[in-house]
Picture 1 (tube, helix red, strand yellow):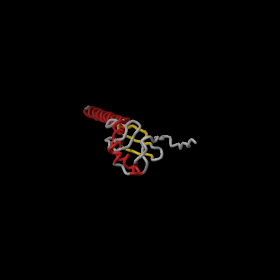
Picture 2 (cartoon, rainbow, N blue to C red):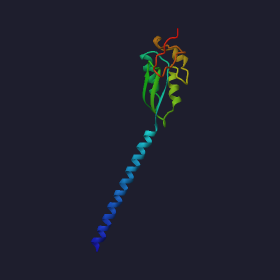
Picture 3 (tube, rainbow, N blue to C red):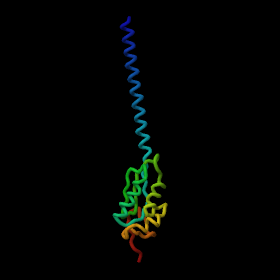
Picture 4 (cartoon, helix red, strand yellow):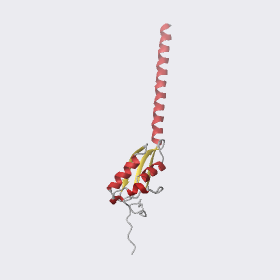
Length: 140
């Protein structure tokens, strides 16, 4: 009789251990999903001219906490950014780039910072931010 009771107790203990491990796995999966949902991708226009502009613009965007990747396209005048929405937002990124002297679609660049840019980086403030990458023919 004691053997039967011990056997039943052992089987019950093993069953409870398995249930506990399954519950632990579900929590880990939920955490991974919520981390993925916190990331966002953003694209917008930024005025600039050259490779030095690219370096400055990308450095400014990367200085914002939560930004994980940045790429500014010189030809398209377009920046692609991935960031953690729990740590920053789009306007913080626009403001950081503007503080380095470059105009974005939403924020005009700091004039003091613009004055300190190298000559090749002094862009036309009316320059189109051509996000499509299409070259427009000159109208004659």
